[in-house]
Length: 283
Image: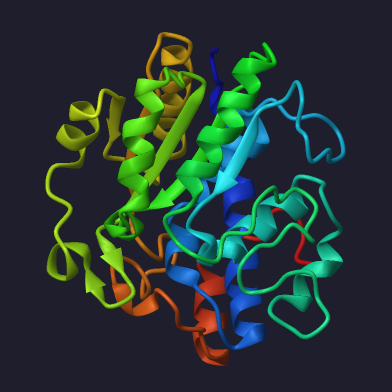
């Protein structure tokens, strides 16, 4: 698939609007997780607006279409913006983020159209994605299952049980992406609990692994997803190690764990929005 410069620009415009949504939601709720949400925006924009095969509307079974599972559920403002902007529910729901009575709670639940698993507890998403991918294989459904994980959540042991299971059972219709920003809530991952050589680890578990150091460059993100898709169906699951910057797009948030779970105040919101062009219309 050849992606034109115009298509890349369109995706970049969507990403800018999604980042505006993220900081506005978190500011309004006075709580939430802007850092990781901003960092992996480009990946989800590329998936939902270009590369994932989706049917109109929402069917929980997802037969005959690609599926996505969010494991690091604290990046919910990103996921909600993506789902709303891609047509799953009206943008008028976004101001309710983390407010009493809203469907858009702090971590996604299946009350939200487009959400197929609740993801409050970290480390569970890979297991669920494997189950969905196996179901597709049993049903002779050629669609792909995508999942997204924070690098910090790889400190949870369940991930590695799942990582052993998938290649053993030839779950080769699965693409797991690691948001490799090197940060978690208490500090750098290297300081909290070193992950070592993730590429070597996944390869030792018999995964196909692709590294992409430019995880906030839209063309690079699109190309690495296309490479991953080309590796499916060949007997092994696929892992993308996507290097991103926490807080990407807002200069005072970038690269620091301090914005993992902190809401901007009024002045900071204004500074953030000034750096992010409005392209689709604020909610």
